[in-house]
Image 1: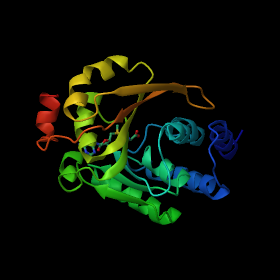
Image 2: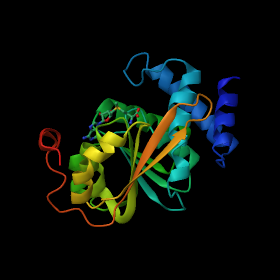
Image 3: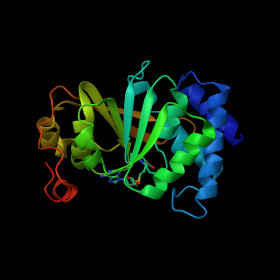
Length: 236
Ligand code: SAM
């Protein structure tokens, strides 16, 4: 199977409603990613088929667990080269996405990708999450994050920006239960005490993954998030 066939079969296995245009856009993103990756560290993946399986399908596999109805706003915390936010924005044109990262070069790359694909539901922002939270408290219906930090740290970066009634989705390895347990205090303090862990296999290569869904049931106390050094050295 070529990349297009792999991608289409994986998206079909997830029962996602995708258009030919969204497949074209993802394959164009893959080209731009691999081209830029020659001169800038964006991803460890160099094979276009692995971009499809390890990035696009891995990210798309979280969609069935999220509430992505028309007009929902979603923040990707620590998006890096655009994961999971960019594939989600391509596959879910009905929602608005903000892709946030602390590294300017990655954000500059993403701005060029967004322009090249003509995406109108997606913005890339250069900022640290703990700083961005100052003006974006309780502003998003959902937050999502992959491969950024351990869960108790991630909770403090993401949950303050999620609306009460919304949810944070942390993409993790399948064996994440210890991490979820270690975040019990952070979850309780930050307004999302209950953790639901959904385990699944990514289509095509069958990798076992999990998404931790944290529904925000109470407001975050105003002192959070703290400065990053404190978050990291004295996690909740
Ligand atoms: N989420 C992407 C993925 O799954 O491929 C990127 C993962 S990369 C290992 C971690 C990214 O998180 C980096 O691009 C880094 O700049 C970003 N990051 C780490 N801490 C952050 C913070 N406090 N605010 C914003 N971005 C952060």
